[in-house]
Length: 75
Image: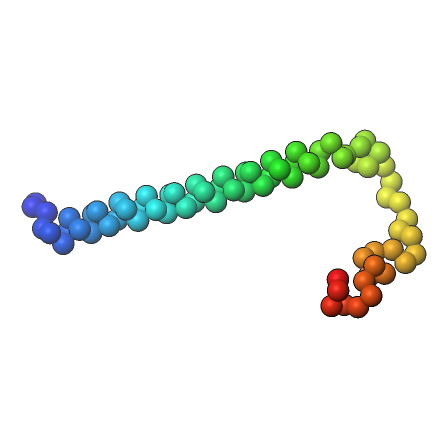
C-alpha cells in the first residue's frame, strides 16, 4: 500500500510527539531522582540510631512554630 502525503505527515507527527513525551517524562524522572538524592544526601547524616529505634519524646508545652509568629500574616 502506498503512503499518501497525509499518512506520511501523520507518521512524522506521531514520531515527533512520541519523542517529545519520552523526553519530558525522562526529565521528570531525572528531577525526582535528583531531588530524592539531595534529600538523602542531606538527611542521612542527621539520622542517629537513637532517633530511628528510640521511643518518642514528649513535646514541650508551647512548642511549634506559632509562638515565633506575631501574626498569621508574618508566618
